Image (cartoon, rainbow, N blue to C red; front, side, top):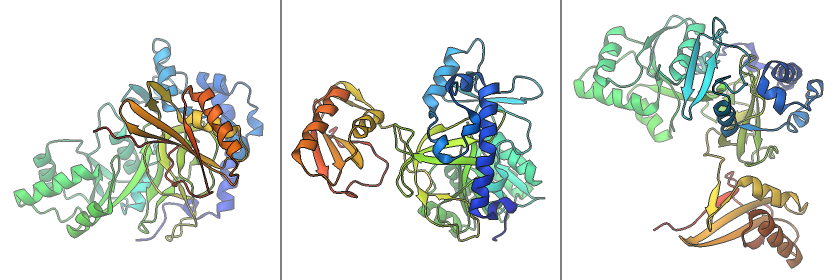
Length: 415
């Protein structure tokens, strides 16, 4: 099945990086001049200087809760919190809402959410009918997939969610080439078709998202003649990464700049270390600069075996917001980062909360080559200063802490 959606997928990595960084200053300038929110966030930034990853990493991360707060503060004047550069009318055919609610604009650009690339990697081709079972109301998922399918030259049946028997009937009579939606709903449809004794011989491929897609479920579909691939995107950013037939991680989309940062900070982590996905999009209608997704992932080494040369990530590995309440006080990942930043000897830090309810015990585990008791004492003092809580300090050898992206681990017993 190996072939490519376009020549961008097989560019030399150095050429791709140069192209992205060449486009970055203009996008920063556009966001700063056309978006009221980024005019404030990037007020002291000279866009022409943001032409390297190191320069990008110095810009503030805007996280989803901040986007929501700006939207809520400006509801009566600007429902998008000043982030969108387009307004209601011909430039914006649709508006969607995600939980919060957070409102997202949809522009008129062909394949606005950039989903066609993921569909192509999943095996869909021009001239096919696709059965789309993502929701078409409130959230953008249905439109995200439909616009990508249209850009590929496919016809779409807007199945949406629910009505399982009617979904089976439509599939049997229209004979689509495949399914797009959540893996759990496809499983329900396949089981319902078996119960109804209705064969679905044409449904041989699927693009799946919005839920976990474990290998066990992938194999379950394969046993029933359906080859499923997953993709990862958000309502704010569109497509971020997609699976290929190699099934070795997810390949990044060609039109986003992705960083992996230490949770609670904007600091990039070394390649292979788990951290929060931060994305800068080249979408001029909704130019999110260093947008923190709140999702954990890590970069995989080397190129995809299919020949695609873009960076690969492991996929979704959990949530980055690990804020935890200890003895009635909230402790944030940013506070752990602030503690570590005061000591150059500290390589990594992880706050572990143990004990039972009402008997919290806080231990700061620190990777360092220095084993003196003086460092532990100083760390304990700074921990109390920043968190207002007493805690023990445990010095461990470099590489001892798990590579799972956790800065705060809640290991308490809640029985």
